[in-house]
Amino acid sequence: MSRDSTRQLSPNFKVREFACKGSDVVLLDDELVVLLQCIREHFGKPVYITSGYRTAAHNAAVGGSKSSQHLLGRAADFYVEGMDVATVAAYAETLLPARGGIGRYPKDAAHPKRRTGWVHIDTRAGKSRWKM
Image (cartoon, rainbow, N blue to C red; front, side, top):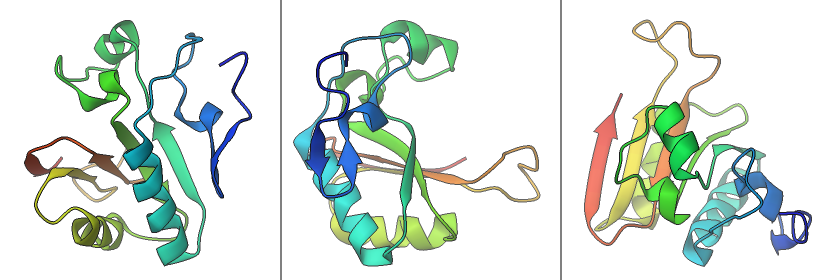
């Protein structure tokens, strides 16, 4: 991080957007950056990454799975400015129809305390889908 935080990974993303607070190491899968750039270009709106790479300690602190793709730099939780979770997740499906992880975390009546809804996307080899 200290050396590469401002390095441009794609037209709209820098290394620092994927960093775990308190860690100078950032693991990052290139395909993840490509997927997020495709989402940014499709919607033509900013994509805000709320969680990218996570250290084991941070992952445990936020209640992440012990086998989380975030630990490998293969996952991001994000939202697209002005777009609902279902619409963003549906487009992500077109990018990863037969593999990868896509999780939906809407801000709705069942989750009124969420500041915003978000989508989880990851580049795992298998296919996994969920809604929380």
